[in-house]
Amino acid sequence: MRNVLISFFLMLFLFSACSKKNPIVFSKKSDLSEISISLDTNGTFVYEASSKVGHAFKENGTFTIEDSLVILRYNYESYSVGCQELPLQNDSMLIMNYKGKFVLYPTIKNIPESNCSFENNDQLMQKVLEIYQRSDFPQYIGKRYFALESGDFSLLFDGNWKVSPYYDSQLK
Image 1 (cartoon, one colour):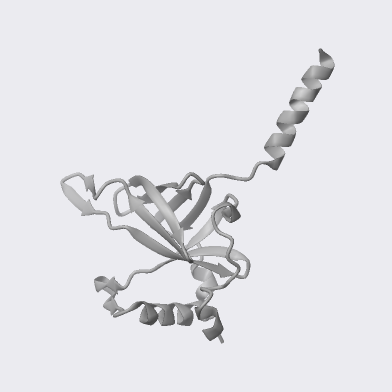
Image 2 (spheres, rainbow, N blue to C red):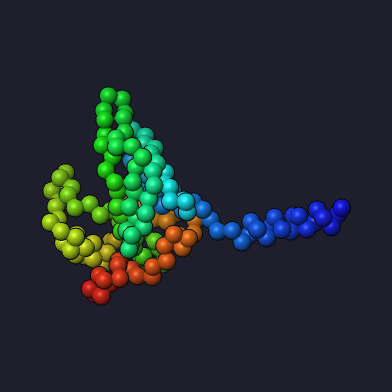
């Protein structure tokens, strides 16, 4: 009986030691908010946000990874808070690698409040390259851009480039 118990616990220990971490969690935290995206290997995600000035937010849906983009597709078209109805547009984020750290960079082409607009993907990527190479870029990882907090991202993505396979050749 003792050998059976020892064998059982040994198998349990080996199984748990060899399993990889899932879900994969990316987060960003600032003085005003905390946001996290939990990606599961089954293709689902949970997006949670809390803010000192806004409302708490928790939505889920499915995601795909295409080339070097994570594309989030929400289960619902909008999110209701009090008397407000907020539209939920599918999010896409560029998977970047900065000095061994995975970063999710938002690929938004039109930000009216910042008076920022890009006509095409190449203009957006040129701006991303510029920002990636700035000396202050690291201080925004985990604050403005999502940083990998926990989990094994190689379960979902195994690219070894910095910005993208095509645009890495344009880094200085």
